[in-house]
Each structure stands twice: as C-alpha cells, then as structure tokens.
Length: 82
Image 1: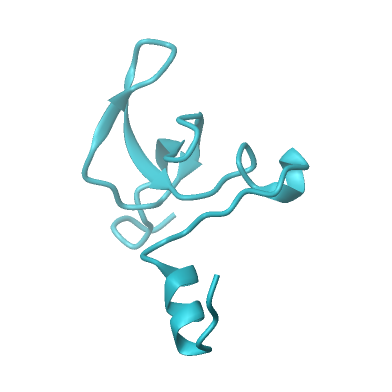
Image 2 (image 1 turned 180 degrees about the horizontal axis):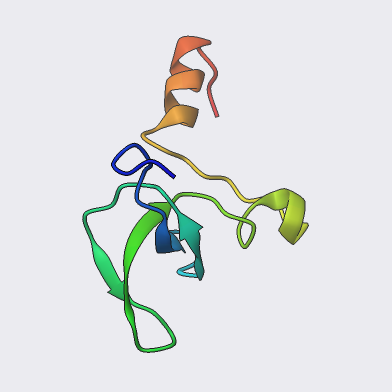
C-alpha cells in the first residue's frame, strides 16, 4: 500500500441524537469530538439524527421529526389552517 494516500481508517462511535444509542464501528469519517464508550475507551464520535434505533422502518413506530419548522413552513406555504 502506498503511504499518505489513504484516509485514516479507525474505530469511531456513531451516536443517535434522538435516542442516545451508540454504535462502535470502523470508519474514515473526520470528527472533532471524542466520547467514552461502554468498554471504557475513548473514541472519536459522530452524531446522527436518525439511525436504525429510531427509524420507523426498523422500529415499526411512526415518529414526527420536525427539523427547523418544516411542518409550519409547509402549512404556511399552502395556506393550511389547523
């Protein structure tokens, strides 16, 4: 393998911000924060809005995620009164 042309491939924690569930896996994603994982070691962390622990397809529950007032903007745009 040639040196200095490959990204940094390391263990990274992916944290679901909606549920707080954390997954440890290998990744090349760039992160600035670190978190202590269940095993007591410190790893870089990347926050996710939705993962398999909160996605309706995997949970079987419909959950409204209103990011930055999407519903209100839609209602205003189409003049919908609730």
